[in-house]
Length: 276
Image 1 (cartoon, rainbow, N blue to C red):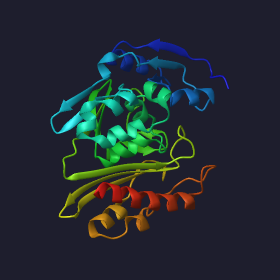
Image 2: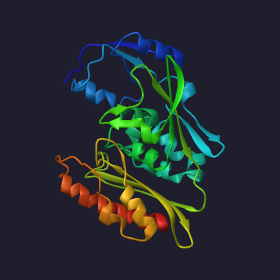
Image 3: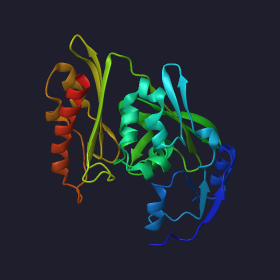
Image 4: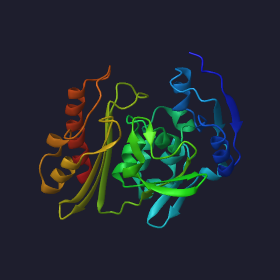
């Protein structure tokens, strides 16, 4: 289908982008476009104004921020996957970015756009949730920091307001005591994950001191598998309880029951990998 008519403006700075978004109630920001453009073509969304923020160079970076790594919202997935700082200190993020879509998607899509879109089938939101990361957003009232646990609110719904844009993402550095894994099942390489799993385990004395497990496409938002996390620490089978508290969709890629089964298989495998 052809998108509904809209006006188009290019923002040269964050302040200009916020101002343009505030000029119309239904304005939408455009970064890499891989999430927004399909919705425009299907007329699921019909903004009267698109604000192109993809050329704001100040929002594309990877920096050392002490105990964490700061990633600019317009950093492309390819750059996230290949940044030496991320590969060294948080390879979970590198691996998840490396598995997104295909090379064309990874060279255009941005980490901020992926998070702001709020798609429960997207990989990076679940990774950020497992890492207890943070998201900075800027609007007309200034900047605010939102923990990952509070950022995702529903299908295509986040805590960022309509006139706010994501500017930075921060993830912690993983020390040598941490193991990690990111696994997902998809029918084709470029498809969204039928189910995905991000795991971070803090190991001690051959066991797990703590665990964080996030699930992709098992509800309206990325979810923490709390029962599975507890099972890892107690030495029980995390796969047996991976689906507890989830509400997965049923679609052409699989039923809800199939997704619950698949989540158990992937959680079990991911925890085993993280413990190694």
